[in-house]
Image (cartoon, rainbow, N blue to C red):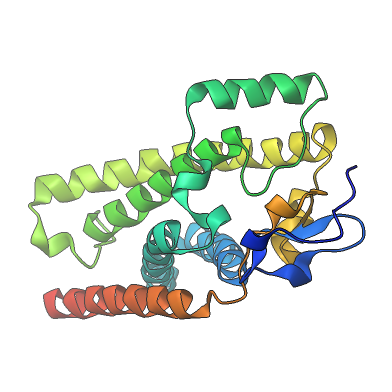
Length: 243
């Protein structure tokens, strides 16, 4: 592992120098992104557990609204957040993803600051599927369930949205399974503890270029939270108006 030079480069000013350690651990994931990740997991579990139980449809809708707000936050944070959270930092071409797979199978993969090329595409697909699931649920209508925005569309489209909601859930569950498998493989072959790094935010990189989580990210994070809360609040009010 490389030893950090005694003097940090100039471009590290304004970044989280506190993430550095003697063993090359640098802070990569900022707190807003980590809170988003674990909140998303909790809300998805709640939504999944209450989706087929009529007595819990109220909790299912509430979880859906909260997921909508979280996803709005993540979309904003993908452009306004820290470097590792931005879409431009991890959405790369298919060649980069294939190259990472080859390096992983050969045991030559090394931890990178943020998502690797393959993991970046997995994140993008996961976000698309989650958005599809939430939006289709808002407009769905079945014999025992009506989404808050279902009155805005015809019965035919409400039925189609319900079908999309069901099929997309299967795709989402399959993607989650692949995601968990990828975490296990990367943790073993790539020598990264991805679960731990998403808890404390640090990675063992041994390179100052991995310091990407700024300490001054609270202002844009607060703006993203306010925007997401406003969008979610407007959606809830619209749903109540249509009820």
